[in-house]
Amino acid sequence: MSWADPCRYIERILVEESCLADDYCQAILGRASLPWTVFPDDEPPLHQEEDATWKTAKKILALRRYKGRFFKPCPGTKEYRCCGYHVLATGFNCPMDCVYCILQSYLNQPWLSVFINTSDLLAELSAVLASGKPMRVGSGEFTDSLALDRITHLSRILVPLFARHDNAVLELKTKSAVVDNLADLEHNGHTTIAWSLNSPEVMRRQELRAATLAERLAAARKCADWGYRLAFHFDPLIFYPGWQEGYRHTIAALFNAVPAAAIAWISLGALRFPPPLKEIALSRFPQTAIYRHEFIDGLDGIRRYFRPHRVELYQFIYQELQRFVSPDTCVYFCMESDEIWREVMGFSPEERGGLAAMLDRAAFPDWPA
Ligand code: SF4
Image 1 (tube, protein in one colour):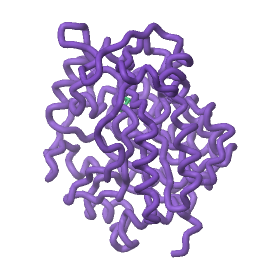
Image 2 (cartoon, rainbow, N blue to C red; image 1 turned 45 degrees about the horizontal axis):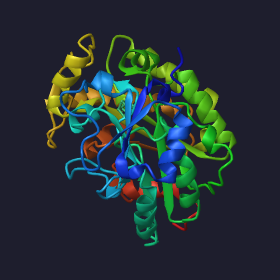
Image 3 (spheres, rainbow, N blue to C red; image 1 turned 90 degrees about the vertical axis):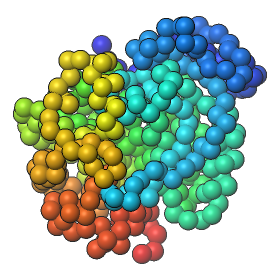
């Protein structure tokens, strides 16, 4: 069965009472054609006594208002190089189920949420973007950017907004192949469509209900044909017997599917996790072997492979990428130290103006240096 559109997994919808009159909410209900019920304002969509384990709750979508700030700087740490990204909260959780998903330890609500007060989101976003400062913004930190797009059509709201702001680039990051809404949008080069990629083995065993490699790359090819710039995230890179062959295969398939010149950036990140995540993931996926390895607690409290092991992974992937990648593509590490940068790439971000500046140059190629 194909999970190119993971939204098919959802079985029912819960609607916060005051959202019912909202046109956007009604449009989602109409497109979803699923049974729905109403829950009172300011109460959780499901109560403890209801069956709300992670497995069952991923079939349930709550449409509700978000009362927090939609737009925030990405919470990097001072110990590792961070990229100056901003995150946009459009909802929580997604219908796919990755063994390593950090949201399992981050969210205390296992059901999916989509925030329907998009007018508040757009007002906040427009005010921030009016500053004129260059900004890279992603909506894929607390959810998958496109997994629910068939019913939310959120891309059709966000992409035209970013098209009107020369100082802003939106990154829509996904493991799905849901791209039909992007076909006819005026994006003006201000939206980059990004895919998380991994070896076929990791995708098959650790990324449940996600699109296959072939499906992701076919969708990426369509987006390149529609003039979008692309990005890819090899994250999390995971050791397993035969990992070199697996990652080599994915990299060759990537450059066979899309033109190298269309790729704005590629990130590399080895498996890392807050310590409580391991227990949560093992209780949900006892058959997984990804935590059967030696790890070290980093300065930021996050558990990582030992440094020589990370370097081994990165050197292999980086060298494979070098066979195909365009000199204009920014290849970077997500949350790694200067020592790792120098050991693998031969320079530290500071020598090129800093990681944020490197990515800004990739995101805004037409801006004066
Ligand atoms: S696709 Fe992303 S948000 Fe969804 S389960 Fe996987 S890691 Fe988590």
